[in-house]
Structures are given as C-alpha cells and as structure tokens.
Length: 372
Image 1 (cartoon, rainbow, N blue to C red):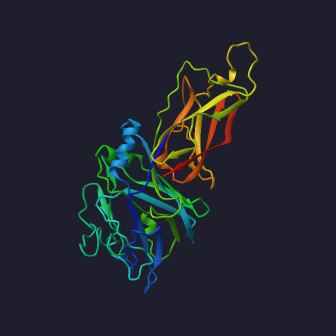
Image 2: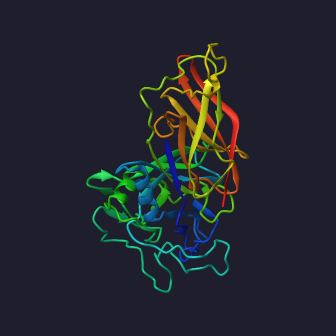
Image 3: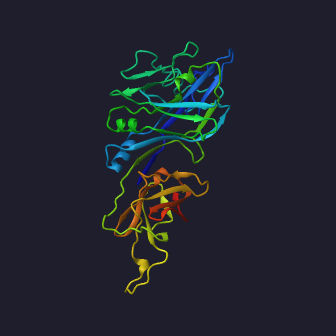
C-alpha cells in the first residue's frame, strides 16, 4: 500500500579520461555513463556515477513502515543515449568511503576541482585519494587496467557472505531508465550493518576494461535537473488492512468515486485517499436510507496507481504487493506520501479491481495537485 520516495542529498559523475581526471561535475544537471576516446590514443575511458540519500530520510521511511525490512529501488531516468552497444550491463554497489559532491559542471572552463573526482574523494586541495589497494574488509575499488589510471571510488562487494551487487541489463532498443533493486543494501544501512556513503553506478567490469571501443553513452537526469525526473530511492512496503467482515463486490458493474478528499495537498502531507464503491445498477429494495450512502467494497485484490496528469508518466505503478487498497467501516482507502511527488503538478489516480468477472481498471479523471 505504501510507496515512499526520497530524492538525493548529492550526486556527481567522475571521469577516468586523462583530460578529465581532475574534473568535478557535482552541480551538473546530467549524470552519465560514457566511454570517451583518448585525445592522444585510441583507448576508451569509462565514467562512473556517485549518488547518496540522507541517512535520516532512510530511517524515517523505516519508521513510517513500522518494519525492520522493506523493499527499495534506486531509480534514474534516462535523458539521452547514443551509439549504444547491442547489450549493456550496469552495476551498482554501496560506496565504502565518504566523498564531497562539489559544485562543478562539465561545461566549466577552466574545469572545477572543488569536489570529488576520479582521483580524489574530496577535492584537489585536500587531495584525499580514493583507495586503490589495501581495501577495507569486503570492499574493493579502482579499476583493473593497465591503461586507465587507478581511482574511481571504492565500494562494498558483500556483507556476511551475501553479495551486494545489483545490476540491470539493457539492449539498445530498451527503455533505458535504471531501476535497481537495492533492498539488501538499504535494509543493512537502516540496521547499521553498512555505513551510508551512497551508491556507485558503473558499467560492468568487462565493459569498463575493454578499452578498444566506446560502447556509446547513457545520460540520466541528476538531482540538479530542472525537470520532473530527478533520481530517487523508492522504499516500499505493504501496510494494507482489510476487515474480514466486509462484503466485497465479487461481480457486477461498479461506480467508483472519491470523497472527502482535497483538490490540493502540501508536499509534506501524508494523505488518506478515500473512495466510494457502489453497484452501478443496485437491486431495488425497500429501505429508509439511500443505497448510495452505504459503503461498498472492492475485493482484497484491488490496487491504486498514480500518474502525472500532464506527461502520463506512471509515478506509482499497480503493485500487487505494495499498492493494495485498505478497507474499514467507512469504505476503501489508501495512504499517499506527497513528498515523493514533484510539487506544483497535477496527478491522476487509477484503480484496479479483480473479482469473479475479471480485471477492471477505473480511470475517471480523479485529479489532485501537490503544492509547495
């Protein structure tokens, strides 16, 4: 029933290209995985992405879930790609050393070095280098190549013999948004099993160290984007409740409407969204009250979804585990955390109901706006 999204505290791209070893891009609107050809040779050099979410916001999500274990996905949204290989594999691990975001941009001339780079995890003045050997227990880093200079971050590979690798494979015809299952890492961060230094996102080792071709590039929106597509960490759990004594609508045509809901919500609101379910053609009966006032109920196989009303982007999908509708004596409802939605935009709610007649989607232009 619950989707709780967190936006990054910081993010940046670091480059192994010899001309960009000291470049910081912490304030850039784009994060990219790219292999660039060298200026004075025919080798190709990879970049990597660093991204971090605040500790207190992760722990706050766990407190709302009232659970010690949740599901979590790291999502980055594609903006542009070019000359991609037919198959690409992207990997992510939890970072094992602290790092500074910086305020540089790719387009800055001269380039900025006031934040982390391929060589340094703070800046060129303090010059604290990323470890390139003698790594902490269960961690590694750098790059295994005679061509590419050592550096590029460090990360945990495993904890308690459990692999912390999460990966996603693409073909060049796929939608290229990243959606990585980082549940194990986030649960370990919440339980103090891993220090939260964020995530490193990189090409797989065989792509990174294959230096004789480009493989193209992937670009994603960063936390500094002026679009509605910043990266996010989506934490999910099922907190639906359904009273066993309630009689569900197992067949027949239904009308669905929202009631006692606001048209606008503040971005910090935690809203209870209520819906009214009734038979489209109720059975005639003699009664002292209207049939339309009695609450009706979907079955326990009922779900909600949220879309951006303008772009039709699916913000929260129908999820059989984590967007279940709840029911009480007043009717059907679900809780929605507005801080996971972009403010000053309109959203549309859809419902899915499965009963003896099959599956039906209710999309009746139920709109609301999130405001600052």
